[in-house]
Each structure stands twice: as structure tokens, then as C-alpha cells.
Image (cartoon, rainbow, N blue to C red; front, top):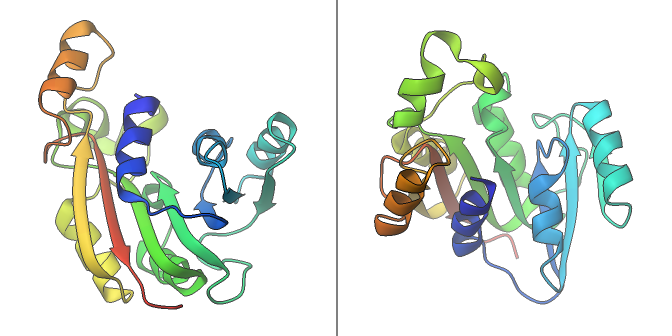
Length: 197
């Protein structure tokens, strides 16, 4: 599942030589590490959970990890070329404030990976407060994502999704390959551009 999520994010995130990327709500750093593996990309991971940041830093000592709040990012304006937040927005108190902060510190692009409330995954894991790792998560729609990004100053907003069928058996994998990035996938990605050069 993580690989399919990364493929979709990779399709939409613009990368260039000496590109800088901030991963907001990075947790233990899975996506931070994946993007850092791309040649020329300098990635910083940020999370409010100090234990998760400590784990991530031990696992990937060459990457900078910072303890911080997504609603009050400890970086100057336009500090990064791009900013991503992969499913972390659904666990933040004020989603709109967090997106505004991401747009403040980004020069060119902000990309949100969200839990899609128009998906089979929501029906299986998200209803009634959520189950397991999804407990307490806020699920969003493509419309929500467009509102967040447009209100924060982003242009040319695109929305795609993946993981139509939320399990790892052969049939779901085949369906995801056959119908990639359909509108009802459990993982929703929205990206918008900025002109803060």
C-alpha cells in the first residue's frame, strides 16, 4: 500500500536538481526516506511526536528531522521548494491553519495526502470514529482538498486517488493496476502550485 501511495505522490510532486522538500507530520519517516532517495532532493521531516522523530532520526541519520507543530511551522517564509503532508492533516486540530502554514513555507507546490471519505476504505475503517490506526482521523473529500488549497493561495489544484480496494490480496492489487488513480481510492492526493519564487 505504501508503494502505491508513493507512486501517486511521485507523479504529482515536481522535483528538480537541488530540490528541497518538507514532509509535515512525517511520523517515523517512511515517506521522508522515500523522497530523500531521489537524487538531488533534500528532505526535512517534521512531526509533533518526539518519539517518532527520534526513531526516524536513528533510522536515517543523514536526514534532518525536527519536532514541531504543523499549525505553526518553525521555518521562514518560502524555506522549501515544496511541502507534503501524507495523511497527517486528518490528525491535526486545525486543518486550514496547517495548510496555510504549508503554503507560507513553500515556494512552488503543496501536496496533501488525505484519507478519502468517498472510499471503500472509509466504509471499512473510518466510520463511527475509526478503527485501529484510523481511530480519531478526519477523512476528507476531493472538494475539501480543493477548498483548503485554494483558500491558502494555491492555483492549478489537481486531485487524484489510489487504493480503490483496501486490502493486500491479489484481487485488490489487480483492480488497482487495472483502474489506477480512480476517484474512489482510499488514498486521496491533492496538489496545488504557488508562485513564491
